[in-house]
Length: 228
Picture 1 (tube, helix red, strand yellow):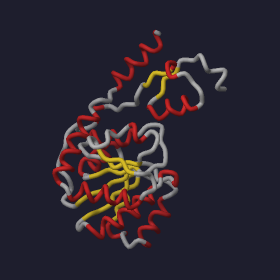
Picture 2: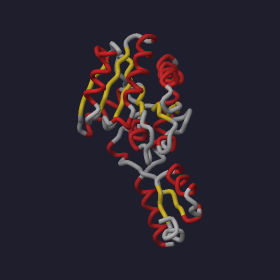
Picture 3: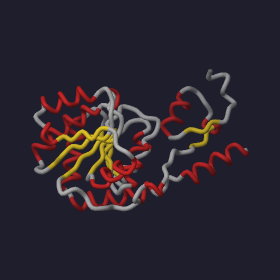
């Protein structure tokens, strides 16, 4: 396969995907990065009013490889250090029963809310009112949920893994942490929740970062590539 496609021009969605091709011996000059985007008109593109309680949110499918259990374990640490904090889960999947049992084991079930599947309007409302959105996955092709959270004026704390690290402007739209490092994840969450100046800075930085992604620009890059 590598040999057959050596002369082919490619469009990939992230630097991480490009790096994987380079590792397999492909020519970097054959690649164009065309980032995924989102429909800005469906998002506030502003920092809005947050919940009266500190809100940490996960938004995505509940699958084992998404490692959402890492967030639950980190939240148990956060809850011991910060009062009036809740963990909200948006999404559905076959990992939910495990997470429900885990919340009981960690004695955090009274502070965990499972919203299940929500429509786009409710999604934007929940993301906008959250203080932080967390992405714990071990690997993604990109990280559109990070950008959508940013478009709601909410910073992200995300695992520093292929795909996700491309969708986070570390220190601007959110913070990265070492995948699987529960204590570091908890530290990042506590840092943002306790430091109002940092949280505000990241919230406004999140909106500015999200504004860089548009289907118009991605379409322009793809059309140019096809014309070439």
